[in-house]
Amino acid sequence: MKFFKTSTIVILLLLLKIKISTSETLKLELNERKFGKSEVLVELIFPNKKSNIFPLIISQHGSTLDAKIDGSSVRTDEHTKRLLKKAIENGFAVAIVDAFYTHDIKPNQKHRQPWAADYATGIAKFLSEDKRLDPNNFFFSGFSYGGHHAHFLYEKLNFTDKYSWAGIIAAEPPCNAFFQAKKYKTPVLTIKGGESHYKPQPCEILTKLYKDMGTKAEIKIFPKSNHFFSHNGRITKGIAFNGCNENPIIMKSFENWTFLNGEKANRKIAIKKCMTKTSGSGKTREDLDFAIDETINFVKQNLR
Image (cartoon, rainbow, N blue to C red; front, side):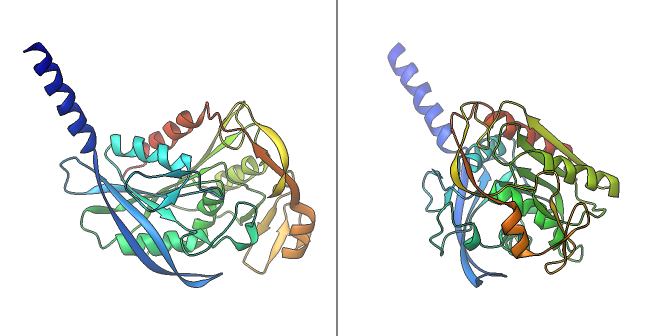
């Protein structure tokens, strides 16, 4: 009798665990400035909680697809996988984007990466019609390449759309080139590792420029963390746009670039001066869950 009760409890707990969330896979054809129309795979996941409407986090992976979501063909990274778990626990829906779905892109092929901010805009427009989602509480979170495009998303803001970004989170972005800071209604959080091969200095500069313009912006730096929020990081050979740390590039438009100090710049000059043959390694990820907590807290604080 005692064994039966214990077994029943275990079975019930397993059933509860299975029913934490429900998901559906979407295949969307979206416009993007580099490849034109492309198919993008999105896993849309809802908490299994009674609610008329859910806030949404759209999560964009980085250059390395090193994680999978159970039961899904959508590829992603460890950052998004852990963010998904915490988001579902806190009652948020999550849209996981596979930006490389129709493109065989390797981590070192930065020049081939699609413009993820275009995808994010297209996905947000599509999902704003979903009655299960709150279009006033859409958040965008990206890691590395995805984090870079989190900042680029400001260039795509359009307040005539049926949705609005309640917050933008950039985890470990390279801030060595960014659009000219303006005053935006949408707050932004940047999360950095102090020992990353993408140095925090240009992100600190960008955060100050946002604040100077009146945008609600903050930066959180984990001093001992590398690019993957790990403590065992080291600088390795590779390729990265991570130079010009004290004099980053400001893009006033796609054609009009200058360095922070006012010097003229263009794509050719930027590649010559700011591209390096370095990368980072080390994936013990001691601080990754803490970085995810920062994201979840930011979302909670900025719900409308």
